[in-house]
Length: 236
Image 1: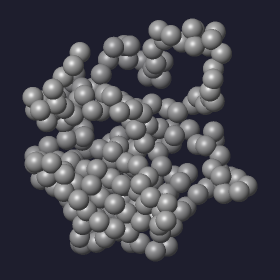
Image 2: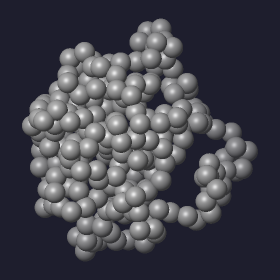
Image 3: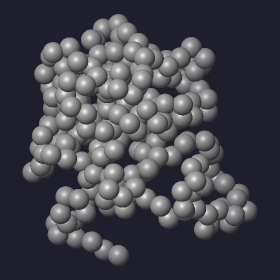
Image 4: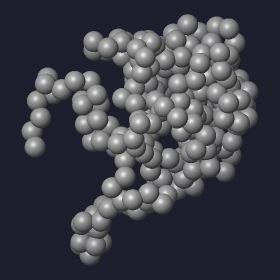
């Protein structure tokens, strides 16, 4: 199948992108509005982009109603944000914060999460998150025709759970149980390997499908339900 990208509407293009670029890291982004209201939302177009200074990027779309997301507005207006790593115990609360709450709603309170204070920036961190970054805004770049933006932030403080910080500045990644984003679902990162793998392992997995941790059918996808939105938010 060959598809000409220029022929696709935004929803069709988004479906192909999120179904092909995976698993994606989730930046669970906490911000504070100029009115002092905390906001928390997952961003799965999230990655590291620089080393000196350490930097991350967030790519953000507008809300389903076309307005700018609170996360973007807060970063733009205050110049500060935190990213929090999502592990399995927080997966459901993370998913709930993808809903489009009114701007005056504090998502920490709405989903029952405890705040942890930051050192340098005003946005709180997610208490219990194994790793969090305190970030300051470096630049914003508008992208495309639909009010999408890329946000670049400098990581000013790394908060790493003590047991995860190993000799020579390494992270014990095998102890994290991180949750990643697939198309409209999630994946638990629980396998690790180096290459090359032996032929019998490759052959055994040649036609294997992902194993579901829930009780849904193997071909289930939230994209086929009314809860999915091409804005990256959820409707329930």
